[in-house]
Structures are given as structure tokens and as C-alpha cells.
Amino acid sequence: MSLRFCPRCRTLMRPVKTQNGNVLRCPKCGYEESASGQSLSVRTVIERKPTDTPVVIKEETSSLPKTRAICPKCGNEEAYYWIQQTRAADEPPTRFYKCTRCGYTWREYE
Image (tube, rainbow, N blue to C red; front, side):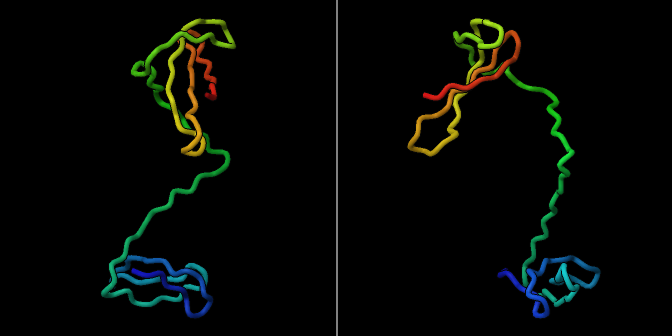
């Protein structure tokens, strides 16, 4: 299905399922047109407020490998580590560490 714009106000029309079938509806002015014969996909968007904070139920570190690294916060000499590509593909990856004692996380650029 191609994108359709409202002929009245030129706003992008959205697919809506109604009792009479599928229609394309303008969210700004309410103009509707039939969408029969077109395959529609309706997507639900979850809106978040700036005051919403994510909740981490359980942080899984038991599957991460351990290495010898000195924690800058507590001085412990053992940490979990993982490698992640945080910059462009032609740049080296970033190594992250998490202290096994205090849980402090830091990174090391190669």
C-alpha cells in the first residue's frame, strides 16, 4: 500500500479498522475514504512520558565471562566483560566491564 495524503489538508492518512471495513482517516481533519482492495497494517504506538522510568526486573550477569580488571571504584580485581560495537564499523569495538563485587560499570576504548 502506498502512502496517501488527505486531499483537504495534505496530512498523512492513517489506516483504521471500522465496523464497515477498512478506511483511511485523516487524524487532523477527520476526512475518510474507503480502503477496500488495499492491504492495511495498523500499528499501535506506545507513548511514553518523560517521567516514565524503565524498570529492570533482573540483570543477568552469570552468563558473562570474567576477566582480571581493576575496578576504579572499589579496587576489586575481577570483572565481567562484554564487547559492543558503539562506533562506526571501521572503528574498534568498545569493551565494557562490570565489577563482580560492587557492580560498577565502566568502559575501555581500544
